[in-house]
Image 1: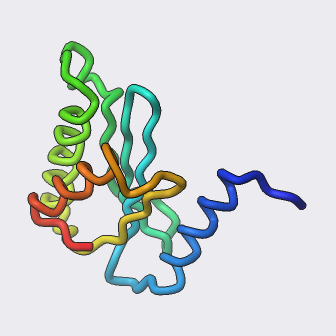
Image 2: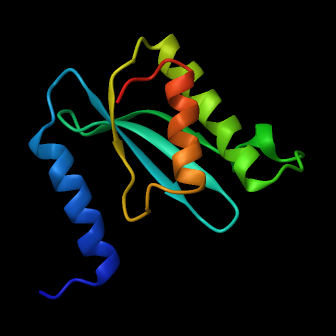
Length: 117
């Protein structure tokens, strides 16, 4: 079966993470579109999503900020939720996106708020 470029990139990044994965860390998967950004903390052992944060949620509906600020706000919200559940160590799964721009700002904001990856 021939896979397209997006799927191959996604598999490549995710499989590298799964090779080094332990039971003490969860995977943070990030997804972005032209306007929004979403992130989930996933437990790959039990195959469940523990936390999620998105710019599509009702909290952000009335806000008029640029995409970079929106990434920072979503990252802070996710970090706050993770601290409540005592999650500090994660793997950062950037998926098909380069570690650049909004993805990089998202990761740096998480680091500032106490997440380790």
